[in-house]
Length: 410
Image (cartoon, rainbow, N blue to C red):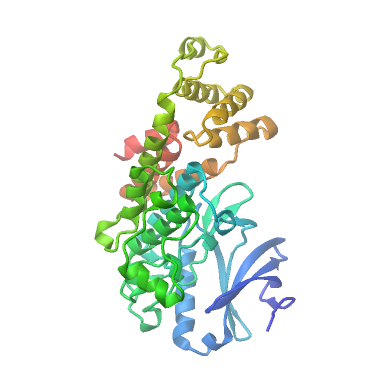
């Protein structure tokens, strides 16, 4: 029965967003703050099951502890007239699922793996396993932030309740140990992220049986198909990264999201290197102009040194020459659409020109992680702070404040 139009506590339900085996999700209006939220309402049959209700409350407490720019925020938990519900950030945007069906650009694959891997490392450090990583649960906000949603079947890693054991997840993206109903840890989530990467690079999932059971059996027993056979433009190194991510045994996979992301970044850099070697080397003298405070000289007509142009682009951003940065970034992308982080720099420079500010996904991530790192330092959690600061420098190598903080922490 639809609940649209009804009020739960201070929330008025306005639209059904989706339904699963455990709960239904609605968009709702919170009049007191004049904002929309997403509300997950436990199905009535589970409210009568005290174990399920305890699990739902435990989920609310566990997920509400998470504070990460790439994880949907949980605001509230409540019970109203026999209904238990969870109130979350409402993400108005699109999902990765809507962008698949053919290979995507390397830049998107790397940005997505970076964001989701960071979110998973953070959640795993808190003892939480997502258990349902899939394209429909990976969201893009209108501002370009990549967000992992639906910790709806997450459980505390040390929970031994029989209710949460067994096969929970989506067959196309489930790890072998999850398919077999065995205990899982964070490396199961990384396997699922590996399946998502496989689909981004090839346009299809690695295993698709005639039934869910057949698909689960394929994950558990069949060798991983070659991503390169499905997309010949991939390098052997890229194919090897996918095979490691989808290893049958957890010990043979990447052990952390950081390890996964770093390996993928190296493979992508290598894949783009051969194209760079064919470019005419004619580096403009950008150093002399930037050192004297002038605007970097334009790239001479008929020459194209992508490394020199990239260095010049970084110099322009340091000098806040946004108009020149936009023009130069466009030149680079016209020749190499997936080159390094030029797309992010272009978006930032364009926003600076248009609004006098830059709020890209990288900016948001750096800002939020810096705040978390400073809080971790203040409370003596230095290992955690170091991990966050290293993550900042991976996405924003010129972030001097983070570099200084990391030196202090070390």
